[in-house]
Length: 272
Image (cartoon, rainbow, N blue to C red; front, top):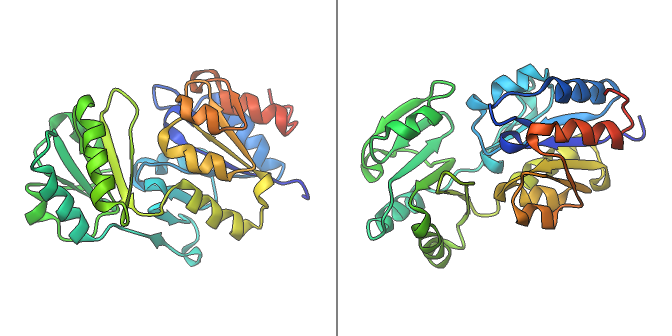
């Protein structure tokens, strides 16, 4: 099909409704898009273990971008390669050391499916237990034994900017960081130069899809690079201002099947 598109979907706040399910209308449109030869993939900040169920629910057969580009693989095709780009363990421990002089609730390091909590944390355990990872709790300087795929700092709102400023001043060459949406005041850290666009480009090269035939949907800080990279970057109505500013267009919210409504029209799918 000459006119095939690569469609990249963020999960939380974008494809997923607020109750973390995929609506029937979105599913209908995405199935129709795939029947007509378009390629659908997921690009998320989540680890694979907590996005795998959506991958199977949509019956995808494409690569998936996890940890905002720090881990990219093809669940159904071993030969595609696994692209894992963790932070160096030295940098990770330096960050933990430096945070001693700041106020924060917790630091979490993830090594693919192993999760390390600096402090015991009932509230966050729930989020991270999805997919049954191995969880270790204790001082990361002592317990972290491998290079982390991603690190998260859970802090208070007023500390967020202060800590990010420090990270930029001290580690700008080696890490990229971004913050989560409210209500979680979380700073997420990955290796420098990684973002969802890196994974999207790998997939686009593999499928030989030109940039102008890439449609990407997102709502948050971690979607900015991907929306900018795609020929059509589409912001969700519920997205942050920065995302709407960088996007080519804005669709309806994640609660109103924004993805399905947009694709049905732009690709003339007649699914709804």
